[in-house]
Amino acid sequence: MNALLLWFHRTGSPPNFDRFAARWVPWCFGIALALLLPAVYGGLFVVPTDYKQGDAFRILYVHVPAAWAAMSIFIAMAVQAFIALVWRIKLCEVLAVSSAPVGAIFAAITLVTGAIWGRPTWGTWWEWDPRLTSMLVMFFLYLGVIALHGAIEDRRAAARAACFLALIGLVNVPIVHFSVDWWNSLHQGRTISIVRGESQMHPSMLWPLVLGVLATKAWYVGSLLQRARAMNLEHENAQPWARALAAEVR
Picture 1 (cartoon, rainbow, N blue to C red):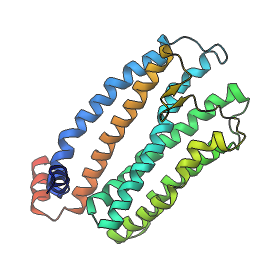
Picture 2 (picture 1 turned 180 degrees about the vertical axis):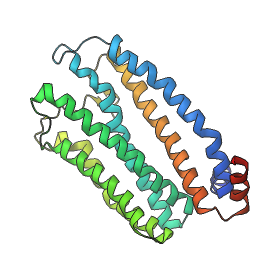
Picture 3 (picture 1 turned 30 degrees about the vertical axis):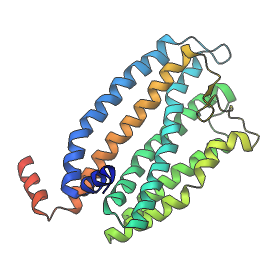
């Protein structure tokens, strides 16, 4: 068996995953904080003031990383959901369901910071703009996955239903991303193109944004592992290894 596939197979075992998550959760949160602190400081105090929007543009250093995180987490959730539905891997069900609350938080941060940013630039807290509306739909899809999973008593049936909704909701991700190109939008166009490697931002203003994006990715992985570990222990609480771990904690 391929070494990478063998590693995934072994890590997918509930006790092995518990040890893996317990080992890496502190590292992920530590890396996230180490990246986030200079990103926040640089965005607030180091980068020059924007010549059009003044200091109001600085909320970009929270808004954009949160928006990118919300979209990338939805893709990761859908990938895990697909694997869970096709290959019936229980750990992937856990990872998909555990991704939803983290993604919902980032989507909420995106909507709130977008409203705060929109007030001085557009003169209103909310506008039914394609980008804002599609992000709101993404937020509701996250809530739908959480609610659907919690509404069904049978654990495996609940996970499968939530995974189906995650896959259906994946169609909204390109709508969020390309909405500023497809429709006449108040929202500014894409400043950075990851595919083309282009940026309209000066490097002196770009580095805190890059650090913020990396920080949200590390925070997501840490939160995912922490939530998945808790759910994994809840599902396996009757197993000897889980009872032994609970006894150690006590």
